[in-house]
Image (cartoon, rainbow, N blue to C red):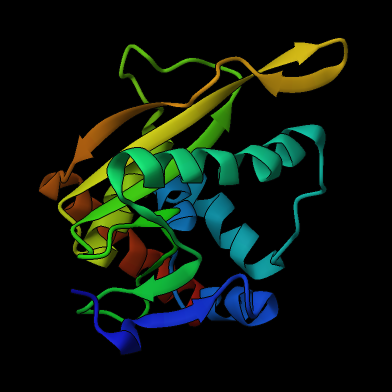
Length: 193
């Protein structure tokens, strides 16, 4: 179980505090990007610049449909929606906000909206890295990766299916070890200039 002090900040109640708390460590998005040489430099730049991505129709579709996907994940699998930034048990600078967390904290969920179908089980590597980081930070055993494909219907995005697709992802200790090393290098770089 994740102890109370590891729940660092809540996105819904204190969005500015959640954003500020994320600056106190390395998140799943950052470590996934930093896992390649070019990505590492971009992650450093992104951290230093703290640039906000301009809103767009793809982001709007995600905002609209991620709660719908989360309800399906809760109904079918018992994994509750999560907006808490959580720190790792052994390192308070290792942070993650999984999209879902089971009541016993043994399972998490990651939710995506996409223009592609991953029914073949080949999830893009950056998302696999995000999931492994979240599994490490939370101590969970596995992750339900759920996604909804979007389609363009007359210039407006709409869901391609009635319900999201999903698959289970198990822990990969080898990938987690590499990501922990990457996170330490990234944190050293951004926290000490």
